[in-house]
Image (cartoon, rainbow over all chains, first blue to last red; front, side):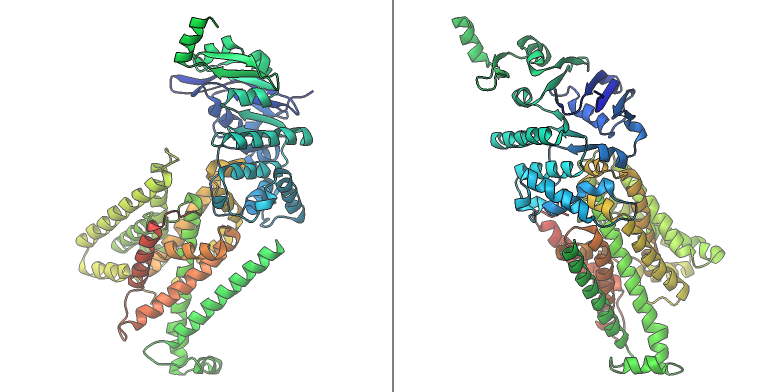
Length: 273
Length: 335
């Protein structure tokens, strides 16, 4: 199987600080891959190199076999859609915003969406449940609804790869689950490939097929693999420099990471856990 | 889409009708009282009558200039506000008008217009405006988050510097040049040079057409540079071209009619309330509304202390200044 996205030896830094150091991995069709790591480890920088917002100082990034630096923004937007932490709460309607997802497919002097464009936008608005508030403005809906709208817009681009930078960062627990459940369902239904930066290790464990754990100390990948392989007590303690425990989630059996506060740690030591 | 286009066409035709109505009103107002009813008759008869000469030789050119300059300033404001996602940005607050006026002053003082002709006015205005816009942009490019607020402050400062330099030039200039500069700075739509009026009309319409090529890019830019780039927009190239268009429109207006404040601020602001933020309607509607607003302001400027007339910038400055404060005091202003 050919990978959708391949990073090979990607490095990036500012002056003497190396943020990304020789990053290499591939994502395969239909995979949900999450990038995890402590604050400042370069997760967002890595996403920016993939989105072509910044150019890596070394290494290559290929999407479906083509080097992204050789692709125009427009050509890239046909392969890859993005969902960021938030979207600008502009005064445009949800429907108009979702329809902007067809922009990469516009001709040079095309000013209006075709019937087909509108059908595609409508289809993904229905799938994501945002059609119900399609006529509301972005600045009138909640943060959770805005993220669903951003997902609808990304899907409207009909991409092979969706790149998401902490799409649940500003959401409460119910919206986090709602958004990630939706992404998971759509991923299977539409054979999407998803690359997502996630801060929350438990969400990453629950939803991702594979994880990339970045190490802040040297800017390198610490470990890549299934949640079970990556989310071990020793690797998390080493990378995050904090006290945690990992147990199987009683429902999903996926690794479940929970923190141990100072007081609790002392008590557990006393009782020998 | 059909529903949307229908609505947009109604707005555009409504505004066009408003421009025509205000234009006709302006045509009938002046020291030589020509009643509105008689205008068609006079125009049809044509020929040698004094009324015909007044209408075609004095009033109509003035109206055409008001339409093209009002449209230009409003369009420039719309483009800049769309690019910077800030409804308080316009050629005047960004210092572009100041740059253009400095350019024109240098032209008057060094008499470039004697060497290369009347085109030196719009050209010097355009160069001055372009220099300021690139300066403001590059000074604020580093920190994306506070970009537009810092840019406004930088723009205001550059405006001060430019007007100080204009005063310096005035202090250094001889009495003839001084008079030329003062007359031009006061700003007027009474332009005797038909070549400049033609340049203004064609230039503003041309700029409107070219800016339409970027209407979808502007819609995407409303979401921020990153998201626009992720939607396939070449943001750097688009912004550069739009900067050039905005500088051209501002340079053109300032060089011909002097500094006319706030048209680029208040007109797009109110048009956006009417049309929403979609640039496919916003560009055309702003142009027409700006044209109607300046023509109306010119009527007020001519009537208020008739038979003398006020510089039209006084009227737009007062209305615009009040509106600016009102816009600032609103809790949340989004594009």
